[in-house]
Amino acid sequence: MAEPPASLSGQDVGRWKESCGSFAYLTIKDRIPQILTKAIDTLHRHKSEFFEKHGEISSIFLQKGMEAEKKAISLLSKLRNELQTDKPIIPLVEKFADTDIWNQYLEHQQSLVSESDGKPRWFYSPWLFVECYMYRRIHEAVIQSPPIDDFDVFKESKEQNFFESQESIIALGTHLQELLKTIEDLDENNLKNEFFKLLQISLWGNKCDLSLSSGNTSSQKTNIINSLEQFKPFILVNDMEHLWSLLSNRKKTRGKGTVSRVDIVLDNSGFELVTDFILADFLLSSKLATEVHFYGKTIPWFVSDTTIHDFNWLIEQVKHSNHKHLSKCGVDWENYIKMGRWVYHDHIFWTLPHEFCAMSQVAPDLYAELQKAHLILFKGDLNYRKLTGDRKWEFTIPFRQALNGFHPAPLCSIRTLKAEIQVGLQPGQGEQLTASDPSWLTTGKYGVFQFDGPL
Ligand SMILES: O=P(O)(O)OC[C@@]1(O)O[C@H](CO)[C@@H](O)[C@@H]1O
Ligand SMILES: [Mn+2]
Image 1 (tube, rainbow, N blue to C red):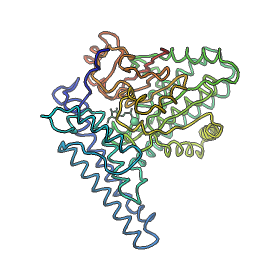
Image 2 (cartoon, rainbow, N blue to C red):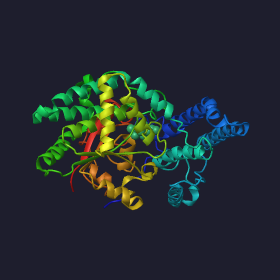
Image 3 (cartoon, rainbow, N blue to C red):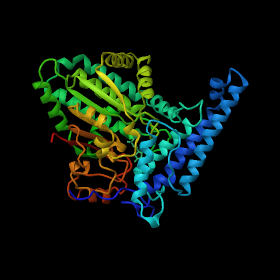
């Protein structure tokens, strides 16, 4: 097979707005420093909390809390300075489960740089690599600053996203509970329609990530169910029928007591996670699946990504809602977890910089776990970038080719477009979009259900 194309990078001129530089360049220049500034500000504002938590026993602890906050802030300021002055990417120093793998990857990036270019740098190296590295360095700053080493600098914005989306969340919870009342009586066609609705809700739920808005609020304020028809023309690749065929055929043909497993590689917490839970509940209630497995991030990531803490926090919030339909959702979801019908998995691979085609080498245990699924849903833009290697593919290259051998099981990307990469389009489709809406690749207005079926 021919070599895959080069990686997107901060040194590119854009596929659009050529005079201003690529989306990758603008992300490194503007968005990432803003995210760092916001993280610093969050640490500042939480100062008193650290003192209360760690400083109440004696003045020695008070001292410790103060020092930790100062240290984390100075490490983050140093990081922001390295980035803004395009300094070389330096190895991680603090021992953590993935430190060695990260540093090996850095060496690999170093080996790709020619002698005259020196070292991997922020605006020079692959965008996927430097962006992941930035979030990993934020984590390093926090773990280097005990006793605040479990502090999530993004927690506040994730929670805010959830609270600000309350009305939409209640509307979704109500829709689900109404649907569950009659689900047993629905004919094939109605069941399929409901499946498609909830898939689309989960797709548009991906509009609300916080790293695109530099950590500023990006919540869902309107009832998304009423907007689905209006959004349909913005679905550029729509393989929903394939997902239905796969799951409904399996439901018909599987023997009693056999498993149908759908795995969801999660993206953002808050509103998007609610849409994923609603879909996952429907999959079990409709018997299209008998088990749903979720994968989250082990460390705070790309501002809004889901950690185990966010996952549990959200279910707890929903359960304690004073809205009866919503709290019923929370009770059911907690039960699914208790019964092992919903399973949460952690793996460090998801917060490494590797493209997914490297998974079978770098994380064979995770690859083997995913192989147990009958269908894997990859939520969000970052997962799409990692599925396709974040490379400069032609718009018409088949999705399977861009996956570059990654195929643990039939899989589908459910993603709104927030990076200058898209494959599997019809000839001329990309060019037409560029002409009619030059920023189509990066605003989150468009989406895809892109499926790669059984081999
Ligand atoms: O994976 P998500 O949450 O859908 O999107 C993450 C994301 O906003 O982060 C990057 C900007 O920093 C973009 O590449 C990408 O769109
Ligand atoms: Mn995300």
